[in-house]
Image (cartoon, rainbow, N blue to C red):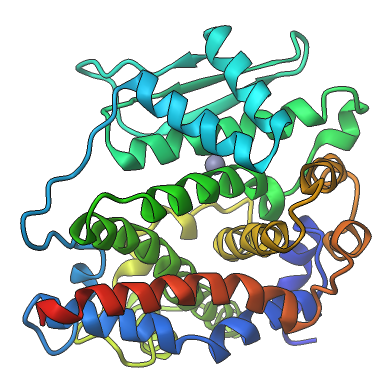
Length: 355
Ligand SMILES: [Zn+2]
């Protein structure tokens, strides 16, 4: 009863309380690899522990030069690797490029990042992004094509059945991005390049498993305390630092007590708990990716059927129907955590000689 404030976000994300709890339990029980990643990164920087502001520092070792791609090269690379997953994703993406649905020019005054918009009446999507030639821009392009594909496979459904919640909105995009980031790491031309790419992937994973866990713990403390009255700025900072220390299990030397003031995600007042759906979506998509590695035959059809039901089913039923998995139990979540833990292992092995 005292956690009634979770009713609204759970309903909005179409999940049960047990599902959210099992996700955080799986993460909490499997934090060690990500703490080891932070420790190794600290050692590479000649520090005992990383500070909050060091966590996302790049790792450039030896004679590392980041690889760049022309737009056409990036498109070829994406289509080739999408095709190794399934012909429909690859064909759709090629059509999107040929039909000039992507505005990617890098020109002055245009901000970085990417965005995909769906146009239900014309049954088309458009991608607006700035492509500068980096591996991360190639991932962004794959990500936005994933969003467009999600809309594409739902084209013939009634409009009301195409409205999916935030926790599954990033399923197709993260999935597409994962195909490409796994390929760039696998095909890196030397160890230094591989280390840099793994660092980018693991920064994202630590944000999902540690940073956003801190946000969730903070939000719960805040809502609990707010029931008894006004919460002062000093208290907010105290609660934030405590949540960060718990989530990072003391792995950092300095935390960010004022994070509640600087992060816009705490100020979206019409969507409470606007943070855990990111972690949910990331690990949800990785769980599907893990299944795709096991069931390679015809998995694309399973994947498409699942995407088509994202707008009309509760998440527990969706996963049970298409993947036969129970997301109220930690097993499903552990598969995704294991994939990322494998990346940590490789990062630790490759960076050994630099400390
Ligand atoms: Zn997205």
